[in-house]
Image 1 (cartoon, each protein chain N blue to C red):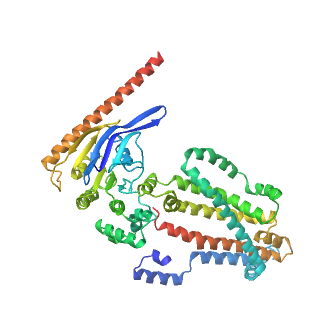
Image 2: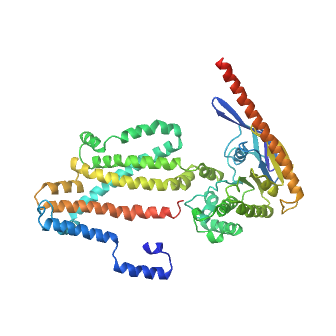
Image 3: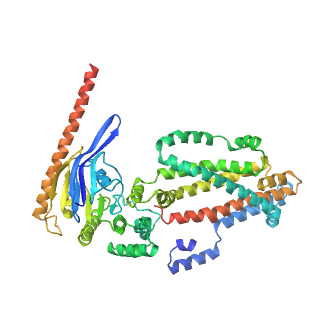
Length: 271
Length: 270
């Protein structure tokens, strides 16, 4: 197993409340697999990803990478951010080389890697520009190149396409699919965009509303490249969507019920 | 600098130089107006030359001063005091502001106190300081540092607070250690704020220093000006010339150092 989560629970204490964000999450990711994680917004998808990245720790349960417990960021696990998180004072090249610089590679070695990657994501001409001179799509290309530069085995993507306009995002998704096919690295993408998940994933992990549990794991066996107008695509979309919708409704119901209870207790107090 | 703003197209440049040849920059005209006004006031005898010497005399005095080693030494002394004061302030402020900027509770405990101290009048503290420490350069440096403390504290603190959390995530994901996170992430992030702080400090402490030198009898420009203005009538000319020198030095350093660094930042800042 490449990445393995067993009974991962995340609890936040915000006195006097205790909020369980994630509860008993267990799943496994195979080497070279593209796994997408979807779920209602606010269910803790990003927290889950951050814990796999070693940026956050589970309250209980374990996360393992190639059998080793993940407690801090692992050099072979890299990440792409929703906000791109490029360092604005660094040029495109210098941003891509950030991880390599930390690793202590010489300038020559770094240049060789960054040039290759910038060529791969089609940003060779902008190598010496600053992030502010790039469009959103181009910035995320830099983010992807930076994540790949350290030659990771696992690439985590946190809503990587959601801050980009739809046309650019679609092009970028196709490129990511190509990169995945070429490099055979393991990809984990957190998204709230269901068609995006179906387009990219080998399997989709569906989380329930808070406290999030694994609702379902759906294998997508549609041939690539995937066309969202094909009937298989549409039917998988419908299935997962109804799962999510049921989740959303039940969470709204619970919410209302708890509100009702509060109201009731207020009325009791008044008497 | 001016040319690059106008783009590279040749016809633009050609048209622009021809226009420039006809009309001098606006500030030259205003300077000329001031020169003429000043000259006529003292030459036409509205005010006696003892109270307001004609500008050309002051300018001649300025040139003479710039050629005088003792005066230059005093300028150098004042400048060193300001620089030492600012460095001292930054050395104390930097760790403090970093700590306060990253921990909210500490910020809530410390910043109000610092605001309180900052509201105290610099010059009143100066008189206290003189009675404690005595006179001389130490007092000058201390008070320059005191007035540099607040602008740097608040700008650096703000800079630390504004660092996006994701930047730290980036550093962690790529396994940056504490030192690397500081040098490759925190320092460049707060650099624009640090620069603003230094720029303000420079102005603040330079102004305060001149007063300090008079009260604490430090051999700098401040005391030079005060003795010049206080002695025989013709020395007013030298006093004014020295004041102008201070102004010119301030502008020169601001342009040569701070403006240039700021332009560098503008290249990448959103």
